[in-house]
Length: 135
Image 1 (cartoon, rainbow, N blue to C red):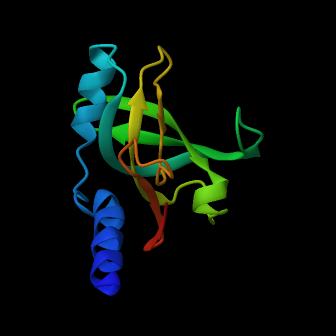
Image 2 (image 1 turned 180 degrees about the vertical axis):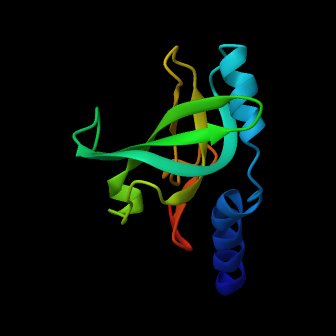
């Protein structure tokens, strides 16, 4: 019985990260145009600049800029908590896929929560680089 409960819990924890994997760049364009925040998105695009690791409010975050193209052509910042994702190899020009929460800023916005939430109060996200998933 314990094994079945453990398996069910693992399924629920992983399910938040694995449910949706199809990019929808237009969702970011729409959120940006409407100045909306707290929008769950999955986007795919090239890295335009690597920002590296910097201390965060609570923990260090690795950041980069990526180009989101759909009916808009927008550059957004992506931030990942390295306590959850670890450091990942990323280079300018590399195509990445990101799942997280979009927050509006006039200069393009930011996608964060690109990792699991240890308190299980937020949908889990990820950064996919070179066929490897970090989150």
